[in-house]
Image 1 (spheres, rainbow, N blue to C red):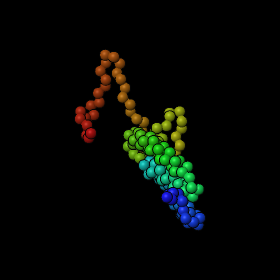
Image 2: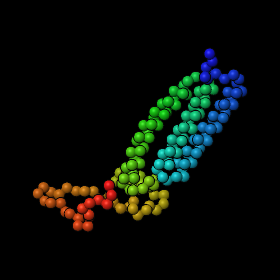
Image 3: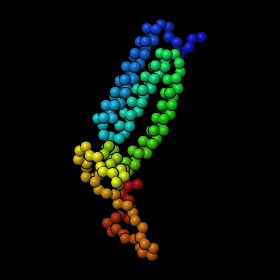
Length: 157
């Protein structure tokens, strides 16, 4: 019985390797262009995943060309790490959206530590420069200040 990795002629395996490397390079390039040109956090995250998939295609192609499963195993590890990275990136995107209300890459500026200066590549929108209002506890035995302008019920849930 023949192996899945065996190819009948060396020229056919070289052609398959060449085509797979071209597809991997195109995927990686599209991901790199997406990261460098977009400011939407979700699109940037998907572009990073596209770059990982381009690398995975290239690893599988080299593994098949050399007739071993090392590249396949490495791709399985890459997929596991990408799944963990997706969960962490989703938390960061939700945090940035929760604090600023938008998904622009400049939303990360508000998540920066207070002792670090902002890095601005163009003017930031006015909504990002407003400091957040954090609730405070009243001293013991004193009623907290009530805002008369705040409605008793939420507009939406």
